[in-house]
Image (cartoon, rainbow, N blue to C red; front, side, top):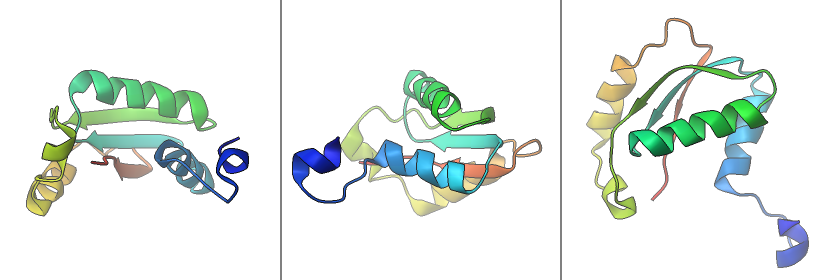
Length: 99
């Protein structure tokens, strides 16, 4: 639908997430987001509904509420938080986030 509207190949961020996780045959996911907890839970639910057989087995939220502030997150923070999230049961770790 998007492609017919804009007249060229197109994909959304959410569509790219689903395509990548599906292509990787991910079944058990650890999810790290910069977003507030409620938004992280919405992303968890969306991914579980749209990626065949996917279960988010752990998630972590950085609680950033401003889209612009997401761009201010230091790379070391993302690294540290990705090391701290529980990945014992996960096939993959997905660091989500756009600004």
